[in-house]
Image (cartoon, rainbow, N blue to C red; front, top):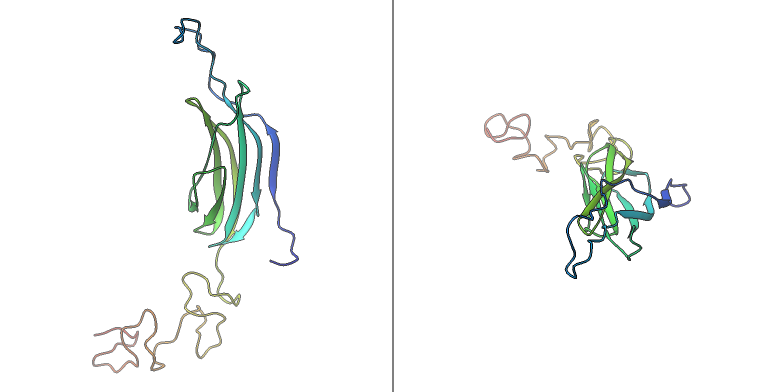
Length: 181
């Protein structure tokens, strides 16, 4: 989208609230008290762009550390009505339907899980007449002869196109909607 400003959401030092507590009951393998497992903290995250078309991709990235100052932890992105490319800290979300889409960021370490953050991106639904062939469209833009107003191909042009069984309609074997009788 050359030259256009694309919004991006990013953050740093985002502390995640988690439902973990110090578990000093019992003993560790060496007989001493068990150490509390540190809950994860997302140290940075980025989502870009915040608006894309259906079929478009949103770049996702995050880093996490745990409260015990041990390195790492796991980051898992999730999304409804979209597809996450890979279960990794840096991945993409592909919009499958139009409208606001929720993307969640979950971090885990040593059995402690925290749903960190929920983000919203907007997937622009396809629009007939925008000059782009979007999912569900047979042609675009409409011109009244080879592409009808609803971005569909006309029945009766003598060419069998997607969604047609036959063409032209003859009333005997081929209906007015280009389907076999």
